[in-house]
Image 1: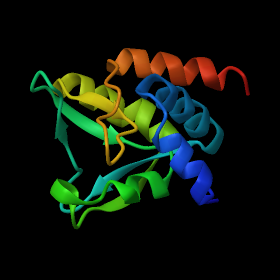
Image 2: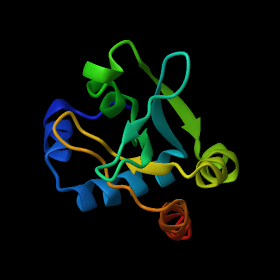
Image 3: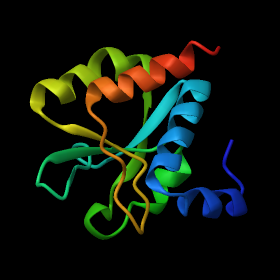
Image 4: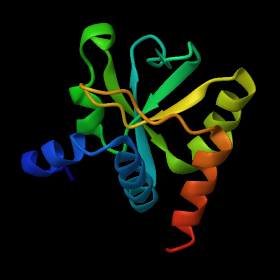
Length: 127
């Protein structure tokens, strides 16, 4: 289920914390999230130089970010269970921050792996 263009435009202009909240709700609801992939996952750098793993709540949001340094990358889904049980611990072990909801105009929010896991688990408790 793709977001209508008007909704997409509105969400993409939200401040980072509001995009983070939207991300958590949508991911908990759909039980999936998205990254960009081409011979490996797309990565970014935080302002302090930390490595960041960009994530989106839906394919279409990842798709609009597949340009410039991520040109040629394609959206790839990750199940929520795989993310929480496998990928998030691996990111934490490797010192990579999750990058929640990048947009073409701004970097994503970079919570710690524990903060993102807690937010997702709190949202899942509502279901």
